[in-house]
Image 1 (tube, rainbow, N blue to C red):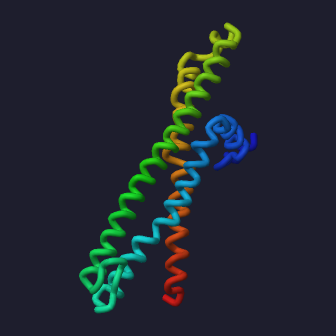
Image 2 (image 1 turned 45 degrees about the vertical axis):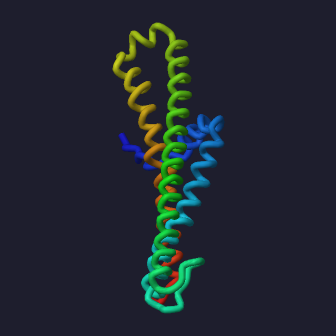
Image 3 (image 1 turned 180 degrees about the vertical axis):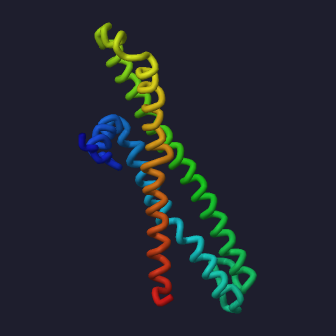
Amino acid sequence: MAATAKKIFDFSLLRRLFYYVKPYRGKLYWSVFLAIFLAVLSPIRPWLIQLTMNNGLKSNAAVGLFKGPAGFIIGITIIQLFLLLLETVCRFVFSFYTSALGQNVVKDMRVATYKKIIDLNLSQFDKTPIGTLTTRTINDIESINDIFSDGLIPIVADLLSIVSVLIYMFIVDWKQ
């Protein structure tokens, strides 16, 4: 008997899973938008730190109303605090939307699974152990929630942030 190779990632299953995402496209689009926005926002704070270190002690340094070295550092610090607050709020909303998306998909899948189980023949319950049905309806579907709240979308968002920081690093100084 030849052993079949186990698929690491099955795109057909992912496509079937995204059938349940269709009613919640707005949350998915907001999650993707926030992931891209956070990726663009991530290299700004290191750039501001670099700006502070390179130009902070120059006598003609200025940021808006803040003049001189001390004013420049205070101005950059205020901008960084604002960016930190903005990033915190965006990350919270991103986590909220991805978790809500996962919970909505899980709810719809559980309702569909429950309807399917109710429509089964009674002989199916004689042949199938109750633990198997319980495992399918609880544990396996809860794993799908992890795909949205802790898996696919947050991983893509983190990869986008890493790529944007790397692009920024290569733009600033590609020789080192």
